[in-house]
Structure formats: C-alpha cells, structure tokens
Picture: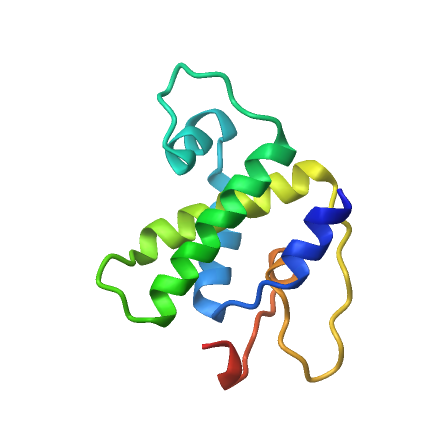
Length: 124
C-alpha cells in the first residue's frame, strides 16, 4: 500500500483528464473495464489490486509520455480509461487522501477525492 501512496502522489496531470477519470469512476465496473485496460481477454482471472495498480501505473506513464511528446498514437479516451482504472485500484488498496500544499498542483490522487485538480501551467 505504501508504494501506491508514493506513486499516485508523484502523478500530476491536466485537470481535464483527472476530472474525466473522476467522473468515470461512478460507472466503473472492475470485472468489465480492468481486462480492457490491461489488454486481457474477458474470461481471464483478474490480478490483485496491487499487481493491477503497478501495471496500470506503467501504462499511464507511457500514455503521459506520448501526450507530452505529441505522439500521434496518444488517445485521450484511452488515457482517461487507464487513469480511471488506476484511481479505482488505488481506492481498493485503501490509499488515504493527502492534503495538498497551498498553491501547489494537486496530485492525481487528491483530484480523485476532491472537486479540484491542477490549475497551473506546469501541469499541462
């Protein structure tokens, strides 16, 4: 669980992506959406939240790199789907919310638990 806290605290993403992932959490169904996010066939046994979290984190970082480098293969819908699954797995791991510093970018974890997200130009 300690790894999940550290890894989500280090993610700072654009507000629109975070808000979209937060809203998608309401309709998230782990049995349906996690296999799609991880590229598993529908009948395959789902990994534990810890293993899924690590895999999703690696995929999200690759998507973020593609977004920042303006790679044509980047998909906003795919990025939101991976971020939604990542937030859900973090909730399953019991990641406690951390209060942000005043005037700082809000990490992805906090944005999942509040109405705010990063509003500075450094997060874009």
